[in-house]
Image 1 (cartoon, one colour):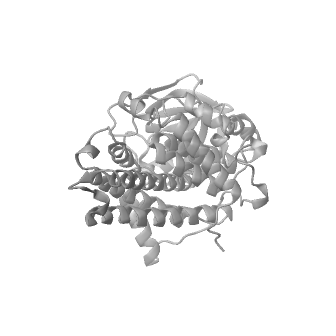
Image 2 (image 1 turned 45 degrees about the vertical axis):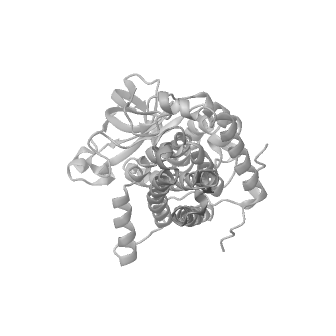
Image 3 (image 1 turned 90 degrees about the vertical axis):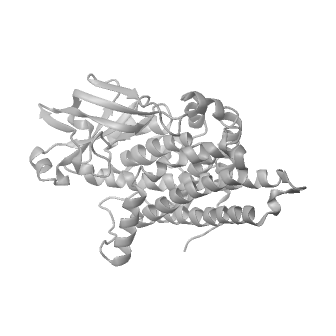
Length: 408
């Protein structure tokens, strides 16, 4: 049975993150966004609060909270600005949770522990210049070399791509299967920035998330030891899909934060903006927009909470994560657009945050599976053309007794 009441630990964590955002980010985010400035020190402060490993067990340097806590953190962060949640998505959702689930004990100690403590930033390399939704179209490859592997390839549109320390690199290890478009020929490796042959850069000219780092990285004859393969040879595609499911969950929670932020900004403006001797809060069509935002917030909040509940129970959450991501992202775009309309001409300037919400939210409709991909997936599940199966590996079930004090 789903319990809709948040625990005291959840509420304390939510309060901690909200206060952090209000004090450490909100006063500066307009300037960072205008200058496309990536403020690395923010993540050091988040690490001090235990957020960079919020749902990673204490034995691996994390805070030991559950997966609902991860969603709460993402919602609060993106209600402030998307760049914060994006970092959580790739660092925790795509990378650290994959290490937790698929990694060897040696890999966890070497890579997961410093990531969970926030000593190292991590990200995820799947997308390439010519391969996005078509994962099998990627060209990166690895060949055996003695007791190690030689990696070559380029990844594009990588969040934290030019600043992260650790990377998950997906590539072909069986070229015959690549020719046959058989995804069982893919594998995953853990790569470090300091490895010889690694290079990266920052992408400029983005529509939104300007305070975040989005980049690319290239591997040219990078040699990694065999111990750096994550999972078994040929399991790369499975690991990628597992990782993306976690990423969709964090994106859904974050997009819900955008809806809430758009609603709150619209309520504040409507209650103070006067037209013809009364506040626009009295105008019926303004009320309709705010009511729509309220309904969308409540619906998407429940969708990601359901997904978090399934993860806590160790159950398959692929369908729930897809639905939550799909609905939260398209409704965040709708909410941000309506918020600009509530603000009128003022909403079209950066004197108010709503124009930033609209620019930022657009990317989430594309990454972690486009709205079109998720539309088809949900239709296939409803039609019985796609069956939800328990993944070969899933996140470990969370025990409520493991909850920790958010203020510790």
